[in-house]
Length: 183
Image (cartoon, rainbow, N blue to C red):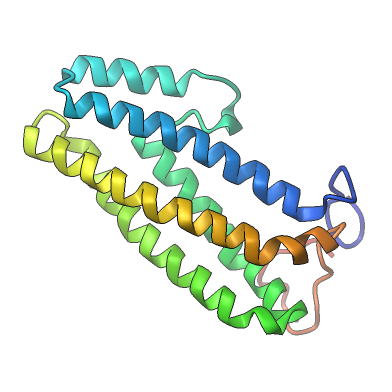
């Protein structure tokens, strides 16, 4: 840790590499959740679904998302919350020309949040066929929207984040350190 924040490896890659790393994990686990949703559509029993979720949970280290529908939604909510709280204000401050881009990303986060809430609710009722089909539809919609969002975010913020070799210093615009950034 430095006075301005954590140092990231591979300075030439900057924060963009970190963003891609997290997004790649989200994509991989989203594909696994979609595969499970397909099995649900094909009539997998609640026991088979539970086994599939257990398999997703036990695939590796905690940050590899150990995902099932509920934990995936929670992790994605958290990721977007951190971007909204820390990343986007820094982008607005240091690259005001990207303000419209940040507006779009924040709107996407609100849309994804609504989708995740729907998925979380539907995941509670896998014993009913209509709920299972609604869950598959919701996951399909989330997948399409989220993949577009991740690509847009990487393309639009990647060049800026690549130039950041450490977390930007906190600026006086946040005098109370409300964002909790390291000093």
